[in-house]
Image (cartoon, rainbow, N blue to C red; front, side):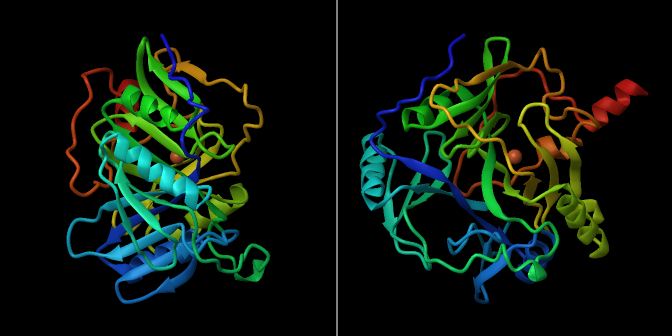
Length: 333
Ligand SMILES: [Fe+2]
């Protein structure tokens, strides 16, 4: 069994997972969900677009929500590079890999590169955004989960090894590598110094599973759930609160009014040393890698995802399926 090796001489430097672009059929409802339940701040909005950021974020937005009349989708996932030179080198690198690139002008952010990764995931790469004041100190304004900052996204895809090779080739490090025997089924890739910026798990895809926001504490998690309940959206608490057995954090997964999933997690652990090698897990030896205690996720958590536009979804090789809440209750009963 081999784990992909990071190319520390990558031609450009990714900085972090920075934002996501989603579509919504009901923008006012989305606004209510993300401001009241998550506690995000509206940086700007018009009739068709909502720009949101976490309480400690200076960057103009970490979530863009666009009005749609069609099926809600994840249009793009956003990545940051260190500077404009890195952005030029990123474009050159993707073009060399024969991945089509387009430089576009978008509101509130610097020069933006649109491209795709090796599985067709639509990427939006930037070096800068406009700034807005941080709101972390204005505690009297904080609402719901008081979400502080964007942390990561998770994507399902049929070929984990291919993605792990691609992103480690571009300088990403692996925090956790999930194997089923000798077959890779998940990779937690880091760009900043926390365990994950990009997570890929083996399932039909590529498709967008969720993004994660860091919240201050467990009390904030409960307050987000309480707010959902009070707004009549209690059923949108899909999974948790609980603690992952692989993943280093407490979690709760919520569904927004369009069915996009968002995770609230506590401040993650930090990877401080360059020689902190990937942790390889054999999931056949950790029967429930999703949680350290409590009940497994309901089946919808595994099966429902937000599609990317114009991406062909393919299926992984047949293998074992994860234990859902429904399976668990059947086995127990
Ligand atoms: Fe997550």
